[in-house]
Amino acid sequence: MITESSWRVFIKRSPATSTIIFAMVVIHVLTFVMGNGATDFETARQFGALQSNNKEWSEFPYLLTSTYQHIGGILHLATNVIAIIIISPFIERIFGTMKFVLLFNLCGIFGSLVTLLFTTDVTSSGASGAVFGLLGIYIALIVRQHPLLTREISYPILGITVVNIISTFLIPGISITGHLGGLLAGLLLGMWFHTSKTYLKEGFFGSFFKTAITTLVMFALLLIPQNIIKSHSFIDVANQIGLGDYVTGEKTVPLFNLHRDPLLNEVNWLIDQYNEKSVILYNGLIDNYNSGINQEDVTKQLSSIEEIMLELEENIDIINSHKPIDETEQLQSQLLSMNESLLDAADQAKKTLQSMDTKEGNLFLEKIEMVNEKYKSFNEMLESLREKYEY
Image (cartoon, rainbow, N blue to C red; front, top):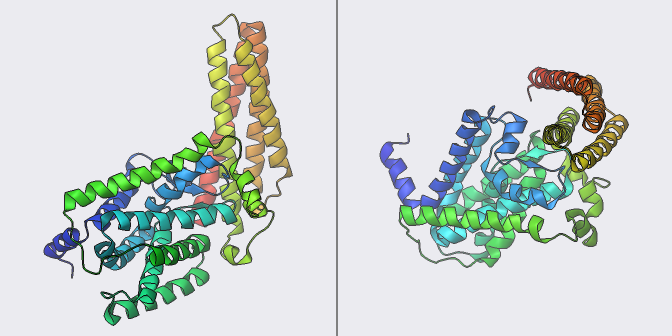
């Protein structure tokens, strides 16, 4: 039984671990307070989930944030929190706050990076990559024969590691890439990072600020590529190191795709098309129409609308050429119809701004209302599909 005094002792001895757990719990609660809950894909994305379809530098910050957000509900969070409570304290006490937080986050980042590199149509999050990284650090410490790592500690950890690796390949829905990536990162980092040969003690508030600052600095560093690397895309760099075909999905690693659920893949693909393309183009059309309707010179708005129309035509071709499965065929047809209606509305917006005719404007409003109805129907169909298959 865990008592109040034991919690206080745990927090006192493991302040960085406690801070990390606190952050995860707060983020989980916020998904319900400010969104539709952690089981909702859109809310999960808003709070940091990784989308492996976004093969751009802009996805890099999510390599870190996805470690702290737990998609799928309280069980996912609870499982990782329990694992962190068991595994982290020893590592924190021999590395110290800053090194421990750096190791924890790096393992999570590397697990997410492997997911970004070698999978497509995946929305993922959770601290399991970092947890596997901590297990990898334990193995490295065993190899290094750390003086504080007794048999009473090392034998159970080896057993836990073996069981978790086996579970990774047997239980559906688990991120093989995230787990193995984190484990490899932990092994390598654990062999390299210097440790203390005695237990380190740090005050809670000092450790809390070190944890927050270290994590924020790492997040800031992950923002750099999208703002600095302009001449080469993420895929360009992947091509240069021989991983381009894996990043684009032309090649796959069979080991990493054991748990792929075809229906979940299709749902994720449709959600990505909706969120990353259709909604953005819809908002862009409305913004350009509203800004141009009361201006004399609408050259800029007309040019933007024409670009939106070209992107919509491209989206329609992509959706048309994408082969659905039986369960998602109607949903994909609705997404296609929605984009076709939006293209029609964009054409009407262009005519309205060119003529500034009231009748043309009323026709545009009617067509936008039709788009809104199709958006609503798409979301209702998506929610119905999720409830039916418990996604």
